[in-house]
Length: 482
Image (cartoon, rainbow, N blue to C red; front, side, top):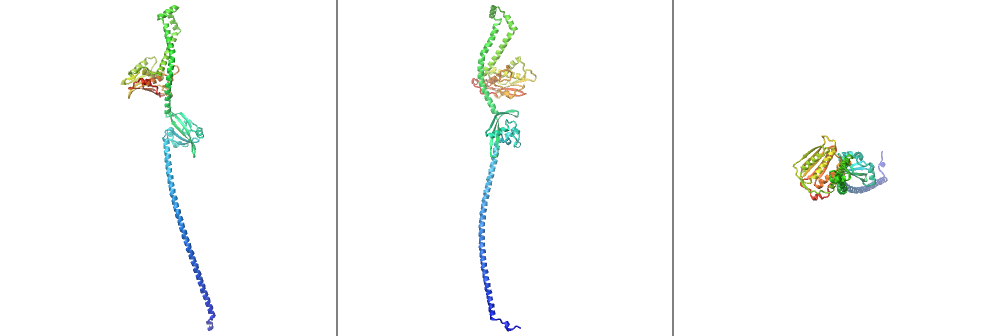
C-alpha cells in the first residue's frame, strides 16, 4: 500500500522539476530563435541568389540578343556577299560567253595550245577548216589534228620560252581543191595558272593576189620602157640586115640592065651565078636570113606596140565582120586548124577603135589555142568563138577543149616575155600585147579561165558606147591581169 508519504512529493523535488521545465522551455525558445534566424538567413541568401540569377539571366538575354543581332548582321552580310558573288559569277560567265562569241565570230583560226602543243581552245573557224568539232579537238596534240601546219612541237616551246611571237607568212594550203595563202603567228601566253600559246592563222589569199597584181603592174611599166629601148636598139641593125639581103637579091638579078653591064665587064654570067647560088644553096641561106629578119622585125613591132600607143585614130568597125575576116585569114594559113565553132550575134552594134588591132588579138588567141590542142588534131579538138552583147558591152569569147593550164601559168599568162613554148618558138609578147591593146587602146578587159583537162577560155569585154579616146591612149598602165 502506498502511503501518503510516498504520494506526496517534497518541495525540493518540485522546484527541481520546475527548473528543468524552464530550461527546456528556454532551450526550445533558443532553438526556435536560432531556427528562425537560420531560416531568415537562408531566405536572404535565396533572395540574393534569385536576384543574382535574374541579373545573370538578364545579362545572358542581353548577350543572346546581341549575339542574335550580330548573327543577323553576319547573315545579311553573307547574303549580300553571296549575291555579289552570284552577280560576279554571272558577269564572268557573260564575259566568257561574249569573248567566246568574239573569237568564234572571227574569220581567223584561233587555237590555244599548252607548252607541249596540246589544244586548249579551238574556235569555230578551226572547226570549219579541219572539220573537227571542239569537243573532239580539245586535249589532242595540234599536229595530230592539224598536220599541215608548217611548225613543229619544238617551235611552240621555243616561242613560249623566248617570249616573242613567231611569224610565218604566205605559206600555201590546199583547201577544197584551191590553193590558199595563209599567215601563221604564234603568240606566247604566260598566265598564273598555266603557260601556253595562241596560234592565229589568217587567210591572206586576196592580199597576195593584190600584191601580185601590183607587182605585175610595175612589171608592165618597167618592161614597157625596156621594150622600147630594146626595140630601138635592135631596129637599126635589123634594118641594115634586111636592106642588105634585099640589095643582094637586086644586085644578083639578071633582069636589071646595070647588073648585066657590070657582070659583062668582069666576064661573069649572071645566069651561071644564079645556078651556082642554087647548087650551093646560097639562095636558101639568103631566104633564111630574110625570114629570120622579118620574124625579128615582127618581134620588134610587137615590142614597140607594147611600149607605145597606137597612132591610129579610133573609127567605127563591125566586130562580127572582123571576126569573119580573121577566120578567113586563119584558114588560108598552111598550118592545120582544129574545127572552129563560130557563134556571132549579128545584132551587136559597131564599136569604136582599131579593127586591125582587134583582129591581131583574135588571131593570136586562136593560134595559141591551136598550138595548145597540139599538131595531131582529131575530131574532138575544137575552138569555140562566140560574140554576144551583154548590157553595154560586147563579149568576145575564145575557148578550146585542150589540156588547160595550171594556176601558176594562168597567173603569169599576160606578163611580157612569159611563155610556155620552147626556146625559139615564142617570145612571150603575144598575150601581153593583146592585153595592152584591149585594156589601153580600147578601154576593155581580158581575162582567162582555165581548168586542167578541160580547156582554156579567154573572155574579152569591149564597151559599146565608150570610144578609145586620145586621153585613154596616153594614160599609164593602171590595170594588170589576174
